[in-house]
Image (cartoon, rainbow, N blue to C red; front, side, top):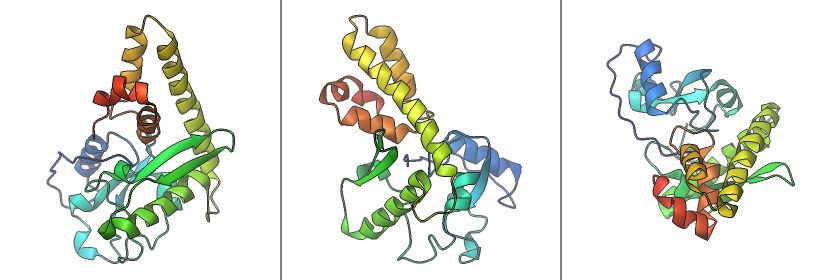
Length: 213
């Protein structure tokens, strides 16, 4: 989950209005806020469900860009009370608390708690649970996680190849430009890429300035 800085401030009557969809596309860079897939097939999701918070039904700050798969997989009781609330990526830099790592050998996504803070600890744990459900299919009847993992494997493996080429090559400039594009905020599965950089001392020195925290 990437930190989202909302810049749009649309005027609308209903959350289904086209201007809302276009504004969310811009603010979320066409990426699902949960799985980070770049997709045109999205739904306008209410972070706090409208059934429980009807007064937030048409509040732009409560509307999120979510792919259809994640919106179906996400439990309906999420964010209905303080015990099941997840981190709001428009308010919290989730990467400070959660690492995403591709484990190719075991064909799974590792979701690792890297820090905790008292007033957010329950939300951090709940976010890890829902990401495990989305990426690994834990406690979910959906098999969409397999297609998602296959895509992540393909994209992250290609990214890692570029990093290896960069480290071995004497002519680094062209490869560096390509890596910078992969680290752009509009890039898919950006959390995975950023943590690969952070976990490598030499790469972090080279590319940390392209990781916007």
